[in-house]
Length: 215
Image 1 (spheres, rainbow, N blue to C red):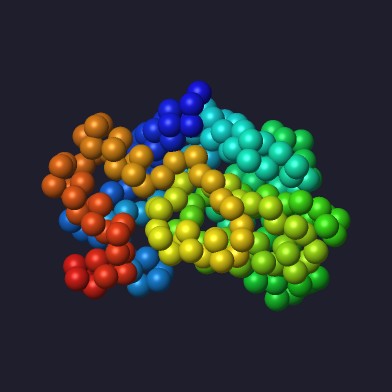
Image 2 (cartoon, rainbow, N blue to C red):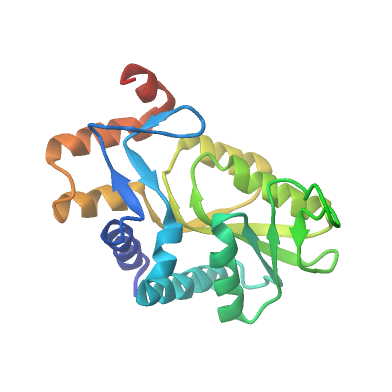
């Protein structure tokens, strides 16, 4: 299956399972304070065996294609934990996952699982927005001695800020699908109208400003 076919199929799955909800007329509020016409929770796809299998196989193929020398798979907590474990299982590789912060009790671990210093690690995320939390997890692995060679995720909004953040961190990332794929499928399948498409397109260009103007 071609990458473009995969991107459209994944976008269709996200809409079908309501992992993605589009509400241009009644925006969501993100934890960042931004108003957003889209809410994405790709953990929902885990409840659908066929879709779950499709996504894990395509993520594994993405890792193999772009990072063939990977030695360890790392899931980013919390939504990337299950996806990462599934990918590691397909590739038969060691698996770890990374918390946002070290535990406040017990061993105080931020990274769960074991890997050797210098091993090449690929991070797995469900969603990339600005890249902040993803890169924070990557930094934790680097500080623990791992060599983070890249990141793979199910979906990205395609924010310019994310591109800049990953470039600055010198960590390449690839996703199965993206916001533009999603909007195209949403319009084609009747999830949104042509006028809603314009609103949704405008939001992605300047999400923080859009939130203020429409709040």
